[in-house]
Image (cartoon, rainbow over all chains, first blue to last red; front, side):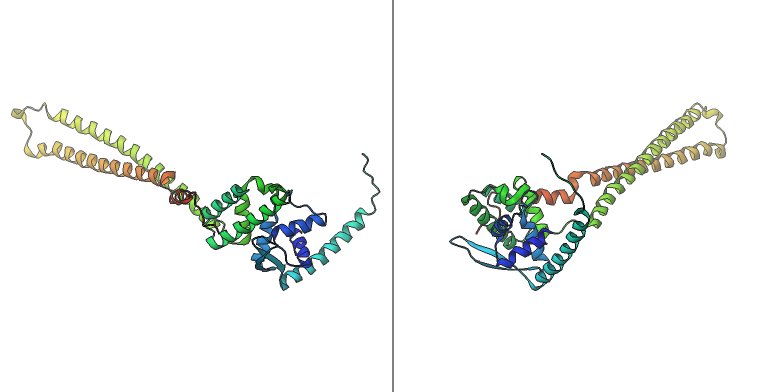
Length: 103
Length: 193
């Protein structure tokens, strides 16, 4: 699921590792509690789901930028479709529950 | 934070990650950590739980990227076979050693008995030549058996020693290569950019 999130934030434009962490955080997803995005990016690269290039960052050293490859775009589309179907199915079950968390 | 990157470099070198790839990952990591530090973010906010275990983090990243290879299951079975075969050989050798030693001792007693019986014979009452041959033949057979058991005993001791040496972790080639890999981890490590 996190790899789909990474592919999703890459749609905003090519990004390097820490930049993607910031984009995820800006969308409310903090994954650093569980682990780093670097192994995930490594897997996406190995599987050919991202393309990379090296370019200078804003005043900093050259960075490795990631963007979704055509295969990555297809994987993202399929993954999002599957996720929505799963979410709707779960909502159909849990949506009937009337529960309230009391402090 | 640079000590974290140095630890990662050492781990990648130990895992034999190709130097250009290791350098690239180290440079990206260093730049990201520096940027995070500038923004007041901690390494933990960037790396998560990996911030506390650089070696695991580095190994995980390299493995996911496909630049190292996990040990094949075949290697594991070879390792277990490597452990079991010498143990079995050592057990067999030990049993044969005990049996040889018992046989050797029994043979020695028998030979001594033969000599003890033969020695009091008075030459004046010596039996005919054909009869005198008999104890000699017995002694000769005992000698050959004893020699055979002694050779067998020596051979089995040698097999036992070889099995122990083979089984010993100090003679494990994997251990030697691992020690070699660590010995290569000098302070310079991989070349930096």
